[in-house]
Amino acid sequence: MNKKSWISIMMLIVSVSTFAGGILTNTNQHVAFLRMLARGASIDIDGVYYNPAGLSFLPADGFYLSLNGQSAYQTRVIDATFPLFPEEGHHRHYKGTASAPFIPSIQAAYKKGNWVISGSFAVGGGGGKASFDSGLPMFDSKVMAGLAGNSKLQQLAQMTNAGVVSDLYSISSAMEGRQFIYGAQLGFSYKVNDWLSVFAGGRMNYFTGGYEGYLTASLKDAYKAYVEDPTLYGLELDCDQTGWGLTPILGADLKFGKWNIGLKYEFMTSLNIENKTHKNSDPDGALAAYRNGVNTPNDIPALLTAAVGYEILPTLRASAEYHHFYDKQAGMANDKQKALTGGTNEYLFGVEWDVLSRVSISGGYQRTDYGLADGFQSDTSFSCDSYSLGFGAGIKLSPKLKLNVAYFWTNYSDYTKSMDTGYNGLPLGGTDVYSRTNKVFGLGVDYKF
Image (tube, rainbow, N blue to C red; front, side, top):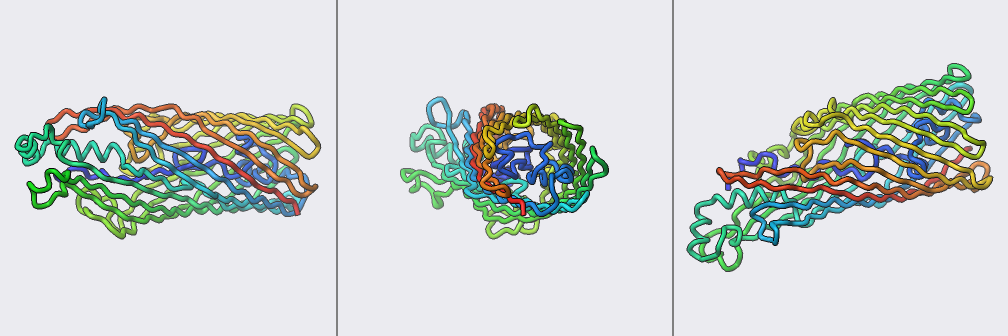
């Protein structure tokens, strides 16, 4: 098989996001989001991320601090059908897991009169490690399609009465990737008058990731005696990646009695990731994209958020929110963003009720619709439209200390992609059905000094 015929065969787990939000953006950066979701009109310490302009309306001067930890677990499943798979129905089931046992975030703000300086540290994208212990269908099908047209293997299959070429060999493969985008944010809020506050700031993003994988196709023991080298095909990769970019952020908050409106715009972040490659078995062919020193675009899309909050009763609050991620304008590997039909749209709703003087319970809903297309989806990086539900409680342990606890999960819609793995004139089509699961638990504390 010609290695140079598949230039991008080992694009290993380029998207490892385990959180809510857009394709490359995590929006759950505080436990209050997990338990209510629609936090874009918040006037609390979590507003450092969700509504930074609203910090000017905090009830008292002083220093505010929030410490949060989240634990996320996600599965990714690909049900693949390909004519050369020997299993019944030519069907194989691939399952990957992505885990983030502990994801920390810190928000802080200091208010003095009409001014607030605020900052945060959180995982703004990615946030875990994804592993496919049995490889991926795109790798297996490419190898099998290439070997099916190998004349020497065809002759060996006839000579040994093995049947078809795929009966001669076995494939062993495993893929693992990790991805984190750490974000450190700093900005200033200013209350212009009794109903208007504005914000300007920025976030420094640092990307770190790592990809390891191998694929080996070898003749089965019964046929090794017929050849000098039983290894028919092999690839191996060990590559780290790093990069950084700056996100300018603007915001405004409008407060009218029981109504509050929060607006925020995060500009697109130009971000290139550079390879530091430790092992690459085919740097001039199949793994050319992972040569040492190669840069790949990984821009974080611009984000617009708009939220409305309303105090129904002194003990009951509700909010609605809209997010739009400008995905098509953000550069991605191989320009795959051009295949999208549009940007990501999210619709969020939340309610919070003070059931006791010191206990509040809340719940929320989020709908996420991506502009997905077959040209964007791949085994190594796929998204699925979804809806998420979250609930939890806020408990005032003292007048200055509040505990937040929440559980959040996401239900994904399956996405079916038609595959064309033709090779040397062989019309070898198939389908991949992508699905995911996601569960997050969060615990955090807010403190007013």
